[in-house]
Amino acid sequence: MKRLNSVLALAILAGSFFFSCENESVAPGDDVPQEVLSKLTQLGFSTEGVMRFEDGFLVENDIYLTADDINRMSPGQSIPVVEQYSTNNLVTGTPRVITVYMPTGSKGFSSGEQAGLDEAIRRYNAENLNLTFQRVTTSSADIVFQRLSKGDERRGVLGSAGFPTASGDPYGTIKMSGILESKYGLSTDGIATIMAHEMGHCIGFRHTDYFDRSISCGGSTANEGDGGVGANHIPGTPTGADLAGNGSWMLACTDGSSRPFTSADKTALNYLY
Image 1 (tube, rainbow, N blue to C red):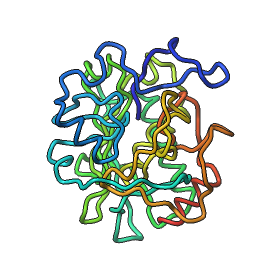
Image 2 (cartoon, rainbow, N blue to C red; image 1 turned 60 degrees about the vertical axis):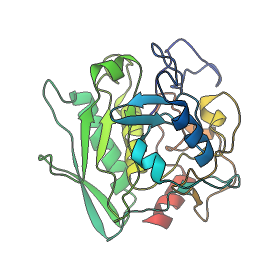
Image 3 (cartoon, helix red, strand yellow; image 1 turned 120 degrees about the vertical axis):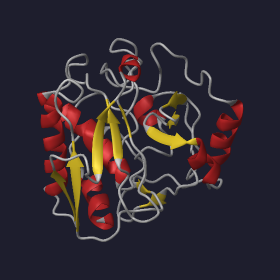
């Protein structure tokens, strides 16, 4: 979802700690070519904290983009200050069951993180959408959770995902930290919020405070445009975004607490699916 700066580093919201876009051991932007940063700026993405990740780059904390993805995008447009956004591509063929696989064992995820995924799925399915999620025991699933490398876990990456494909399928891979429970001490509900957030990206949700990530992350204010992949206002959701009542599950940064769906989140989910 985001990268962890330090549990003791920033306390900007009534003394509560939050997972931000800063990095513990690798300076953001290290070894990222200037042409990539320039292209991301032209597209409307924030370049704060961009880092190399897998075969591409991690942008805005948890969005995985390859060089080919970036080169295919067109410059985005400035967008108004509103609450919920979706990408241009959404999951199609509804009603639809999206299968989800999470491995266990030494290279998989703990029982606490398994429970977090179960809770994330329960939250979605409780909304009676035309999309439902179902855990399966085979890796030939629509969405597969994979453990981050130990190096990425050590430098504070919490999770990453992408957006739906042009053919209407959910993004197929969520890379997730396996130390949310053991190192950061997150509860099942806190873990569920991070996992539900990445699942939200997979079905087409942008960050709720995309127009101003400083709301949840701190730092400077910026309206980042649509990034060339769309940031479409979802009708019925309010203007602005805040942290009242722990805020939306799709806020860019998390404090590690539980963020079940707000009424605006439910409006957005029901509008799209």
